[in-house]
Picture 1 (cartoon, rainbow, N blue to C red):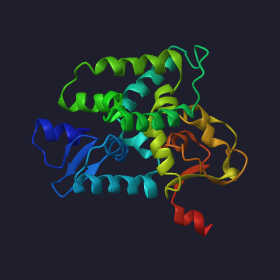
Picture 2 (picture 1 turned 30 degrees about the vertical axis):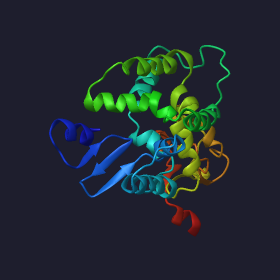
Picture 3 (picture 1 turned 135 degrees about the vertical axis):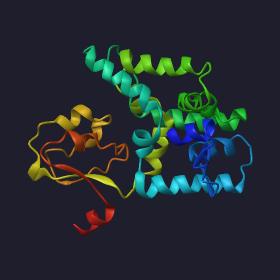
Length: 250
């Protein structure tokens, strides 16, 4: 965010543009593959440099990062983490209303965005994306996009814990699918685990931790965001990051 902000306000040439399409040191483009798919389905043509930039990002998250975009890059963490912090301060820790929203809803929203892009001739989710609104707002100045961002904040605070990232956002669904076989994973050593369950308390996707206290191995569920919160919370040295090469050797 600092690099993007500096490029717009101070003329830095390290990382210019935004999360949808950026240029790194005037050497090559970096593009959002999720947005590129919507643009292509809408009937538009993208330049070769943009397409290659999308393949670079796609390759990185497919082979290395998995769903790390959600935990390390996406600016919506500023909003959702604030909502989560307030939930804890106000003791709002459970679902406040009976809601039919399941975690697989984000996949349906992703495919709906692709379908609407094909039918409408516009990049459907990009047109209404709070992620894009927040990123552009932080770099270039906030417009009326603050309203959509505030709705996400209220939803995460009062309706559903980790509601946007864990149940709604199609970008997270997209990277869960493309990063299913990524190399960097969280490794669990059952011999060290004392079943304190501190990892479950901090994990934004606790369903991925089903092996905790049961067996050793890596967290294979692609919905893991590789945020490292479980590693930080674990005082038993039972969790750590590991590469695919080490997993294969074992």
